[in-house]
Image (tube, rainbow, N blue to C red):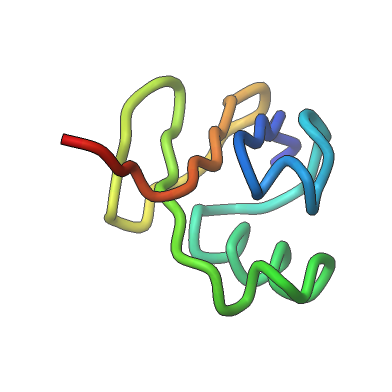
Length: 75
């Protein structure tokens, strides 16, 4: 499925702010991104699908939007 990816912070510096990829689920997306952008392989980041943050593997559909967010900090 073709999904829109929006990246923030340090991730956006590596990948660019917005781009599209083809992936069936979030695990496949992460694997593809680590190959396409090797610095992401060792980086921790949160994934949100259609504005919902998830730690589980989520199936992706056409026109879904995935956000890649660096770890939050602060207090």
